[in-house]
Length: 113
Image (cartoon, rainbow, N blue to C red; front, side):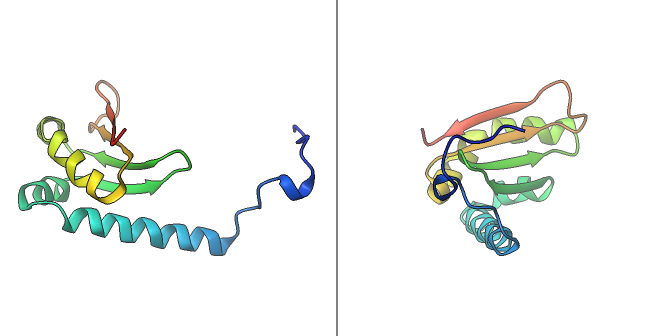
């Protein structure tokens, strides 16, 4: 355990259950705004996958887990359009596309930077 050299008033506050609840609500609203801002083709692609937007400390991240290789390649080839819709929602973010086997190919791109 490393002790911080900062005085207690200068250290970050502990995250409370209320903070976590607010973060979950924020993620839900951002996800809805992103999804409903997409065209029908992008919505159909997203509907075939498990996806979520998480609000990390460094930047929001859209994670897309694809059920099969065909969907994965469709998603990767459609990444420019997805990034345009995401930038309209978050301005700066990261997109991660994960194949079914979660091994071989893993696609990650930062957008809005």
